[in-house]
Image 1 (spheres, rainbow, N blue to C red):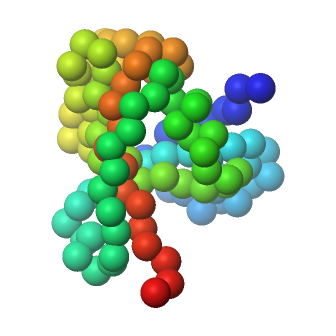
Image 2: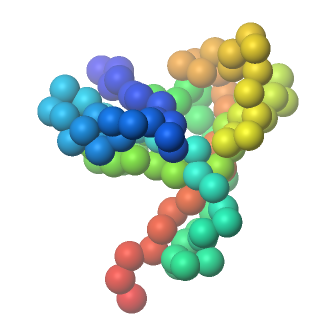
Amino acid sequence: MVRSFKFLQNNQEDFTESILAEDERSGASWIYGRIENLDQYEYDILTEYSYGIHPFLNQFPDGFIVTILSITGPNGRIHNDVAQYEDGWGFDILNDLMTIEWVRFRYGN
């Protein structure tokens, strides 16, 4: 079963409502993270390879929001919180092998 996902933008006005709405909780989603505030938290930066975004997101529980630093496609195109391309992804985000750099926050001691 392929879960849906939603790309959340930092300036989305209905951010909280969209996360809490039942119809939006069909899987994990992601938001591009900024690293300037990470010194306030304990975290690890991980790099994973995934054939499409769904297998990556499926490792997280429903409603979870993953902080992604970058997604790099097989064509070498890097997508992050500052890179925007007129022609979109430039690769198939649902099926192509991509490199995902993301933040895993540490909880507890």
